[in-house]
Length: 227
Ligand code: C5P
Image 1 (tube, rainbow, N blue to C red):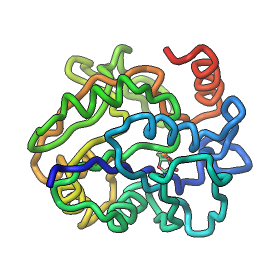
Image 2: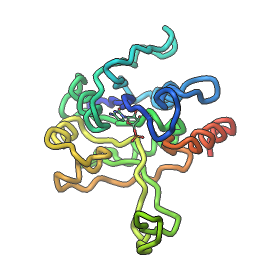
Image 3: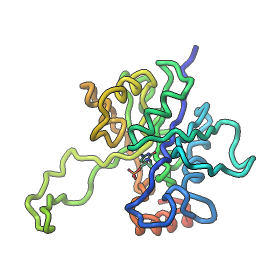
Image 4: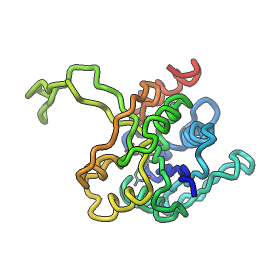
């Protein structure tokens, strides 16, 4: 049987760094919440067979009926960390070992259809998998506890990781099966197995909303149709 593409969207975080009253995935972005906009971006890709949204165990919010097509499933099975939430989502998938899984942050509403298709097409049949990422453009500084520069970090070869991150279900389950401490994205879990994921060029508009200023930027990009 041909491999299928599934998506897992971790959406069980509290979003405390944003300082808002409710979890950031539910903040309004141009008349709809950030989570639903991120789901729209995934559902625009016809190769994705099903999307599992991982919500916090006490999250009872669900979209109005008919808001999404039958490909989306909401599961209140999130864990203490993002990696725990992704592992729970993977566990609940009916994907077989060789099926592909795209993991995409609920807090990245600006994913374009082009970047998503580029990831799927470029990874193709790669034995490891890959992720969207952007080469770092700024000069990088390491700072100490009092915000004094301690070093300038060589920028060549550095990329900022984005999502989606695309791996086969079997590999990802193995990568996330053990100790998940310190794992902030799927690629880092796969790297711990000694493998080298493919870097596929993402885009600035696919930013992760973390701070209040990011929300304003995401809003501005959305109203201008992306960047
Ligand atoms: O907090 P951060 O920005 O790293 O979260 C990235 C994504 O992971 C968000 O979509 C958030 O909802 C999700 N997350 C999760 N479970 C957690 C923590 C974060 O699903 N325990």
